[in-house]
Length: 270
Image 1 (cartoon, rainbow, N blue to C red):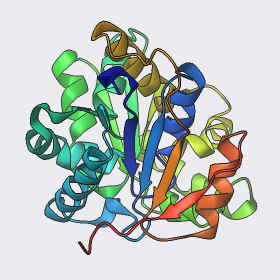
Image 2 (cartoon, rainbow, N blue to C red):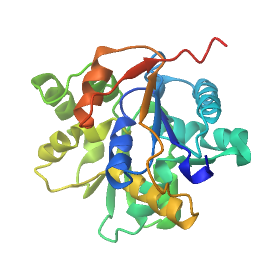
Image 3 (cartoon, rainbow, N blue to C red):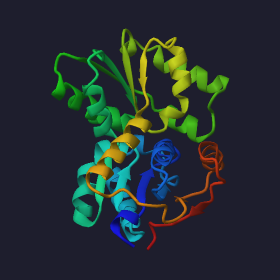
């Protein structure tokens, strides 16, 4: 198997990275995906940097063992806290990408994005990864960040498109930090699942960034420019979890038009 035919590995603490996996599958149908959801340790957003790094490096080793040409950290908390460490650990064995840099680059090109809001887990918001990177491009912009820690467990438990999720969404988005924003970055790969509800709260007057699509298009351009695009599909997509959760299976099958087979994989007790 040539490098171009090797799979793309993605990982997240749970179902959130499936938003990215779905976007990649839509625009890069020839690419085989290998997804790992670390459901045994979710959410990453309330963990320390050291813990997130440890989990991320361990999953990277699993993806390397399975011959992945790219390791995409499809988790904002891990991207913000462990990207450098994973990249250094992997070295030249695979390409390592994250989900923060593509979104920052996209927003930096949006001249109309002057009052930018960022929502995400505590780990992502406290890292200031979005705020620092956007202001480095254009210090004249205003960046307002808000941790929304209940969104991930809410989504992981399957509370979407109902009164419970709408109440939690209203509670967070009504905070003064998000007053007067014109653009909102969903700084967690779980959040595109509730993007329509978030847009509806703002009466569609705020540009809610579809981060999953942006990351997928960034990956597409990276593979093309580095001659790594798969010429044809080399195998079926594979989905692994560190612990079975009913909602993961439900949401996974909602994203893909095929029945998703989840394989429980214990990578921590080798």
